[in-house]
Image 1 (spheres, rainbow, N blue to C red):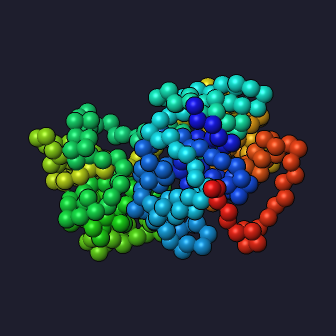
Image 2 (cartoon, rainbow, N blue to C red):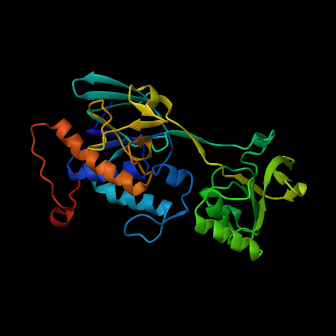
Image 3 (tube, one colour):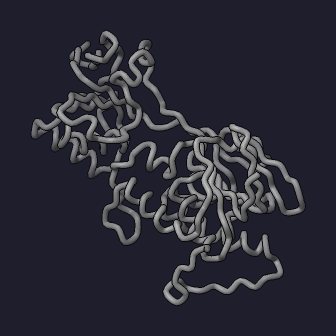
Length: 335
């Protein structure tokens, strides 16, 4: 049995930073995540993608941000249970919860902080009959390392930020990049749309709009994508990789059955301290919702900071909590 002060469900950037804020209050943390490594979506989906809205970093790679957070929380010696999904939770005392994971690991803590991002998620897939036959044989739904595509031919499908951003990045890496989108206009950031059009005009990428992939060809490995274009009809595009980037389909998974208030696949919280209404359970980051909610990492950092202040008062109602700046006290880890 693992025992801790705060059990954090989700080891993404928000969950990791919450360890730091808890550590400043001398609260120990243990993190549970279904993924096999810390970092959440940053590690799993876009470790090499730059992030531009982290204060103090004009640009930081997602993987680098995770590495920095791991270094930042190291003095507080958090525990990790990785590759296991938070399955069920039960109250085992006046102020004590026991969480059981998908592999039977049990963790007890007076406070649970849900920082599970989108919850359980899976990529949205195009309706191509033989798509599954080429998964990991040329078809990928997530770009983990752009270097895999160096000197390769790549077809990217999608019209959102992910498809646009990766097209821009791969244009400098792959030998040939083709972006296909079923509409004329894109849903992504205007500057990204402009960059993609500029790359197409310069002949650095192929841009096919009003088009969609309808079939795949290959013998044990992908060799061609069949594309149906509104005006040109069917086009056969030779390629080494087909990457449909249609976003993720989020699901709360078992957390939906924990008796929390749910609104549109997100947990409703009180913005005073990001509590859920169930004493001792908080929800921070992309998994929560409230009026004016923005799904930004920096907002999650703020939410986690206020949640642990409230958690301290919940665990130690008779102790006075005096706020102290790190510039004065420094960072004193655990022995």
